[in-house]
Image (tube, rainbow, N blue to C red):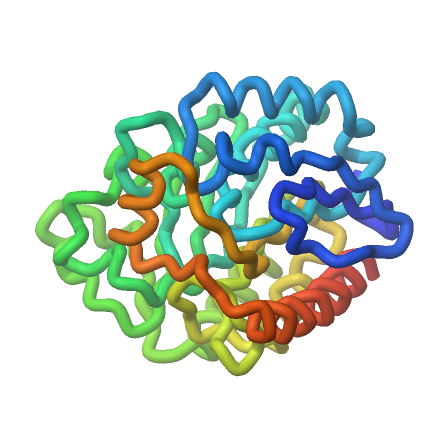
Length: 297
């Protein structure tokens, strides 16, 4: 069943998602510290069990909103939950709009920048396309941090704008890298693929993929325009079997020292003045409403 005007789900981990019509909101603030940015597999398994217990089947709810991009790794249990519900359905394509590859090495379990490998290597997943990467995470300075298995297996593609990824040729991985001069060229190529190769698709949107004039997040941001993202949603009409949105902006101080250190190393800014936070969250909420309406149309 494709997505239609089904009630959205809010995983309320950080209080950043505003009220939505007909929403199903799960209060999860007591899980924020354990899950935010990264976690061991135990907390992730506990969260997956909680979702199974408290959410209706995936084909009975709409887009899932999970707050800050610090929680993007929760796409993993959402996608696996959908796969279990689909049983013997055709292989799933996953399209991730994100300024980062989310395929980096992380030795302590899973975090918001490492979850894509786990999804890409699922046998039920045909391919993962991470689209809109403008960060240096896939540049040569950070090439050693990328998890190579899904790239080598032909199950993951990076779609980037303005990033030098010449190192991929040294390792024989150039087929997994698609670089573009600007977001318009990238979007046109993606639309051509989505319209010519129709298949069940899960869409995950991290709003740090957008240019700062579209919306503000507390991560470094990409170059995608709102109209380009909407065109991607339109191209997937009749193909979507699930979707999520992350990338809200919220202010938080980790009580766990290693999370504070890793967050600082990633250049994340979670200390935002209240007035600025309110302004940015208002813009976030307005964009959420437009995205949800387009996905449900």
